[in-house]
Amino acid sequence: MKNRNIRNLLIGTGAAVILLGLILTGLEIYLRLTETHIVRNETNGVWPSVELDAEFLVEYTPQGRRLIPNSRVLIKNHRISHRDIKMTVNSIGFRDEEISSEKAEEELRILILGDSITWASYLQAEETFVERVEEYLRQSFPDRLVEVINAGVGDIGLKEELAILEERGLATRPDLVVISFYLNDSRPPWGFPGELGSRGWLRRHSLLVETIYKNLKLRSFIKEEGEDRLAWTSAMNKMDWARDRDTFLKLASLARYDWGAAWQDGSWEVIGRELDRLKDLSRKHCFKVAIVAFPVAFQVYADFMEDIPQERIKKEARQRDFFFLDLLPSLREYRKSHKDIYLDWCHPAAKTNDFIGKIIARFIFGEIMGTPD
Image (tube, rainbow, N blue to C red; front, side, top):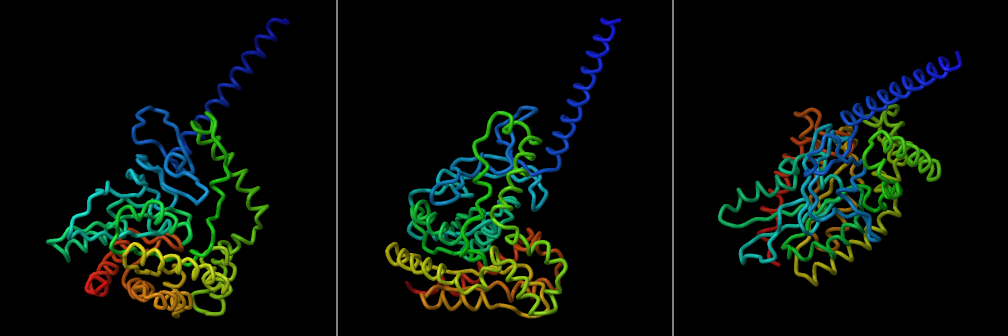
């Protein structure tokens, strides 16, 4: 009887272990089908290593986030576009083709700096506004070599963008540097992804383990940093920001740690210092500068024009003799005849990237290229 009880216990335990294994395997497969993660392009195995926060693609340096040179990855089920995106980074750390160290006499090189809107990791490379600018400019200059370089990196601000310019961008010898200015560019990067620590074998190979670990760390991070940092994301669907300007400004105040920073006076001290730094670099290295102001989607969809940040950055640009383009009026007009032009509050859809590329190319061709140094 005792032996039978032991045998039954072992059978029951074995069945429970098998059932648990099947459940965990099912959860792992489900997450790999539904959650954003990254795999190396050269990985051909059935069960490749995975990443949630781009350790295969992004590194954290004392100067901020940088794309890892020569990265070749596939972003599965991108959290913004829900598509599989092939990401290729060149040898100097830009999402672009290799750039020759030799520059032809008549070659036009344009370096575009920016955050996740410019990097556009949620779109295929040819769909990004940077690539669309290049295509439209090549049509305008059929007899001239045109190179538009994507130096964008997600979750950075103006300070980090200029560090990238100094570290890597100047080596491309740009004729024009374009700053894709977004409303939170005075803010430091959010920082959470860089606090996940080193990854052991289990976290590298199990999306289930990585997801649980990340969620626990995120809860702790938000608790320590203050939940008001994300308060606007839950409030935006409850507020009549589209029809009432005062309500819009309240939402901007709630979003002061993100896009709402541009309505905070203190932000402009930071921006002014960085633009002075950019002015010094442009003089020293003989390139022109253009500021292209990207709006938050709430500005585009509001019934009224709320452009205080755009007017402020325009003033800052003009004081330093920078060229300036405000995309807000064009996008407000564009949304009248197009639906779903944004995928969230700041990332334009592929068709909108094409529209933006056309507007920027027209701006560069018409207002900048004919202007003497």
